[in-house]
Length: 111
Length: 115
Image (cartoon, rainbow over all chains, first blue to last red):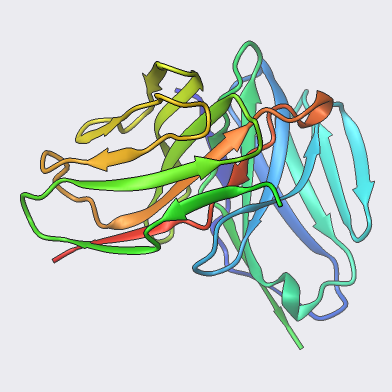
């Protein structure tokens, strides 16, 4: 059973701080990693994807992948109240195209 | 604009009824998916399809059925055999170019409530 684990939170951070969201996965053969953001009552939308070890930056967002330790993280710099949402980690194993989702981490950014 | 259209947005079902959720995409994506989301839970895969006239069961297919007669359409039927169908249902597709191949694009979702 391929598993993707996330701390359900909520993770509460003050406005302007760095929010750090973590995700671990069980399948060492996983190749593709995605972060989706889901506002309450809405559908998920892509934040970032990462395929190689290391960091990938896009604006205020940085994804970090460590395949040896089997974790992927998402850093949100200068957090804003509008970043308050649930963040879903999704992982695709090698040879597949079907993502497995974690349960999501709820982020609250308070003014 | 390209996207995925789900309908209806809200649906109420009486016990013993079958209901069908519509999903249409104009992204020219090959793969389509149905997910179920319960409060505080992640997304659980119901069915997926990579090509027309072919589809595969996901992790929680019991009590559901699908068809893929056209590339653009992937309707989901929630049958009376599904004992706890109240949930948020999400349709998605994938098939973009290059590194975007496996990125999912989601519809707005359909919220089903059993009366």
